[in-house]
Length: 111
Image (tube, rainbow, N blue to C red; front, side, top):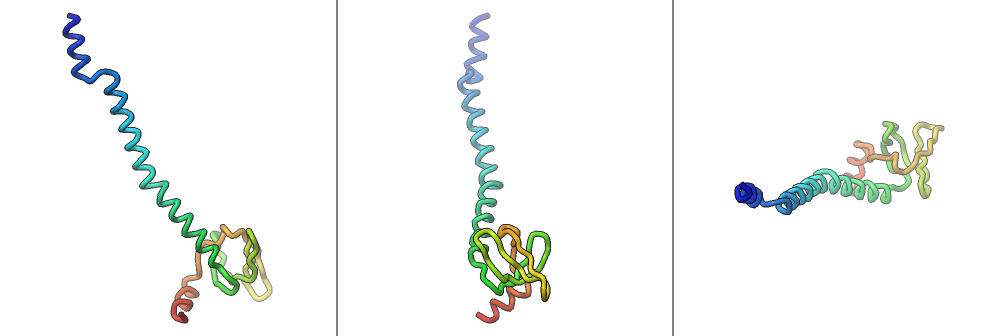
């Protein structure tokens, strides 16, 4: 009876084999998360930081709240936009998400 139990345990690979299978499974899950979630977010964050670094006065931009305006002043952490003739609003730099579509087309035509 003991011989049969021992044979069944060794056929399954024992507890060490199960540990390595679980370890490989966890490494595979981490790799999937890294390549599908973490890495694309890092690339997008880097691209957005480069976009913010290239902003200058006169650029027409859109905020995350949907406000369209023209950059009037750029501080260390803030940007002031002119949104109407006499209206200026100050935002954090992270609130700026992109150029205005029409403004970007005009910019590429001029270059």
